[in-house]
Image (cartoon, rainbow, N blue to C red; front, side, top):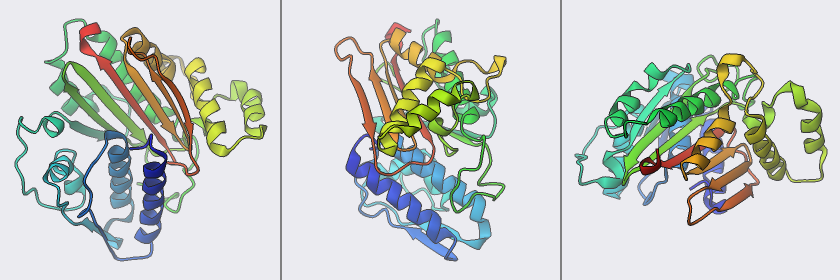
Amino acid sequence: MLLNTTTHHELTAFLRSLRKESLRNERLTINFKHTERVHSCGTLLLVAEVDRLVRAVGPRCEISCTYPKDPTVEKVFQQIGLFKLLGKEHRLEVTEEDRDVFHWKYATGVEVAPIQADPILKGIKAQLPTNFRKIVVGVEEAMDNAVHHGHIEPRGDRLSGNEEADARRWWLFAEILDDWLHVVFCDLGVGIPRSLPRSWSEEAGDIMRLALSRGKKDVRMICRSFEVGRTRTELDHRGKGLKNIAAAAKDLGGVLTVHSNAGCVRRDYRPDSKETNDLSYKRSIMGTVVQWSVPLSNA
């Protein structure tokens, strides 16, 4: 779970080690034997990193994994395509009785085009109320934002310079469960704080010169992106990214959580909550994960 400081640190440290070792070894095995719980945000980040590695290092390093002892975790890894990425056979059947697994859908792509999310959108449209347009627009805004703020310059890790590693790829989970739509987007670009518009670079520079930790500076930049809406593309047809996503979450009484680099901003607009959390971390996820949950009863 990325919100938790301890698990955030452990996951980012593991992913950093995985990237490093993939360039040093001809074969790697990820040990999932003792994995007992998974959360959508951290799991999508893991899937994204593994997918990028498999595409980038290719035949030079064979990456595989062990099966988890926990059957629910194994079913999750089957459902979201992680085992397929790592060349593991599916051993278990996922049925509707597996409520926390069955409804999750997964997609990935390299452009902002609804057709690339068809495996998900077609699956959820039948369950959406007739006036679902606001939700679909929000999903497209999230996809747009995930691609266009992330790749204005190289990511800056050990794989940068590799064509597959530098691809403008996004990853997506979506689920409808108990009358809520849950969407999680990820990109492994430079992150929101490094991609804000040049039109207010002076203000951004002021934030970066403050005597704050890296994570707290990232939090301020994420908060500012909620107001600005756009990142550096600033094209008329791009929409307003996080600004519109946040507005939709607020209008519908949902929850929005944005992790980018070493910062996190969470806004809970549910009537019985109204919670606001700004969190900073010592390690960067080197990208952005946007979690968006809205109740369909208010759509």
